[in-house]
Amino acid sequence: MATVFIGTIVHTKSFSEFESFENGFLAIDDSGKIISIGHDYKGWLSSNPVRAKDLHEVRLTDCQFLMPGFVDCHIHAPQFAQVGLGLDMPLLDWLNTYTFPLEAKFSDQQYAQQVYQSVIHATLRSGTTLASYFATNHLESTLILAREAVRQGQRALVGKVCSNCNSPDFYVETAEESVSATLAFVEEMRSLGSPLVLPTITPRFALSCSKELLKELGDIAKRFDLHVQSHISENLAEIEVVKGIFKSSYAKAYDEAGLLTNKTVMAHGVHLEDDEIALLKTRGCSVAHCPASNTMLSSGLCDVQRLVNNGVTVGLGTDVSGGNSVSVQDALLRALDVSKHLDFFKKHNIRGTGKAQLQDPNYVPLKYKQAIYLATLGGAKALSLDHLTGNFALGKEFDAILVDVSVIENPVRRLNVDELVEKFIYTGNDRNIIQVFVAGKPIKNDCLLK
Image (tube, rainbow, N blue to C red; front, side, top):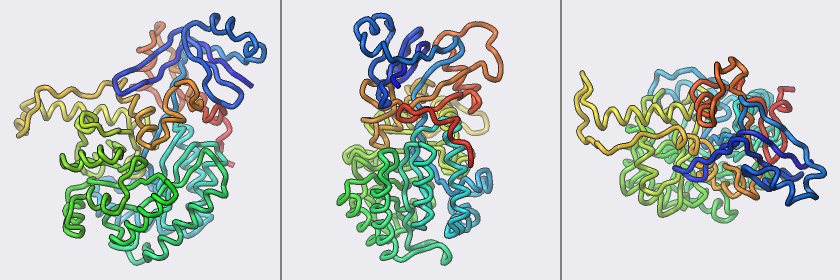
């Protein structure tokens, strides 16, 4: 049934363009596509009398607003089983101590079903309508993740992880096994027949793949016009090892394999060189900013403004379990924190630390409305799915969250549009997200564990 939401509606149109409708309306047709948005609901009704006959009205309260669903550009689904553990370790130690032993357990399909059911439920509960998931090396358990996303109604990119070297003996595959399983995964995903859940080519990172395997994966991505995801320039020690093996920059290692495309998203990008940023822009690649894990694993502070100002699309990633929360709202807040910390370093003479060697008095930290863009439309662009989702442009599918800031505590006075949004962004949590929609279908109440 066609539906119209009447009340406060907000979304972004670009990195610096935030649009809001107080006492506005948004209409979707019975296929879940957006057919109108604006201020003049009565005017739209009078000019669309046929649609008005079968229209279901949803009236929002003064404490509620509608916004696009969150997009998580980088999350490791199996690692939900260890979220919050080992976060006082640097990246490579954390991988060997916690992550590789955990992911090896996903040869057990029953265990995989339990974890994957839980992580998709948790992300949906937190308002994530689109996620780009890393699974594990295991074909069958990766298919379980994809099927679970379909069952619970989430839009997702799902990747079978590929790694044939520099990995523990108990969790590694040959290049031939990796290519064969990846091709089988792509074929199985086609037979799944879901427009919401798509495959993405997923070399774990350059260190865990031989040059030959990276090239094979690049060829597969090109042959089937597939999305690509991996990691880049996360940790200084990691970067030096990559340079030693590939005799090139991190970005060039991927580029020589054909893995940098306009459907590629690379997580982190904390320490990208200027020429690497230029290469990503030229290829149309995007970066998933993962502020929580960059801090937790002591990787560094990613300067989002530097990337955006140089023409690179940026979205947000929770990077569970390097990050400690599945909430993109939490990642949004962490992104604002990191940007403000960079502002301190670039401008202040910090007692005990001193001035930064390269100061930038003109640096401008992220604003919360720009961070909302990163968490919604920016993320959809980063995943090359902004033609379908990310904001409320006409013709897009209705992926949205309905927020109520009064769930936990009633505001002491009526809040204007910006205040409603700020209240949720800075103090809210998943309890304030009272409904989640994907492609027009309400799913939060339907994603309970079974």
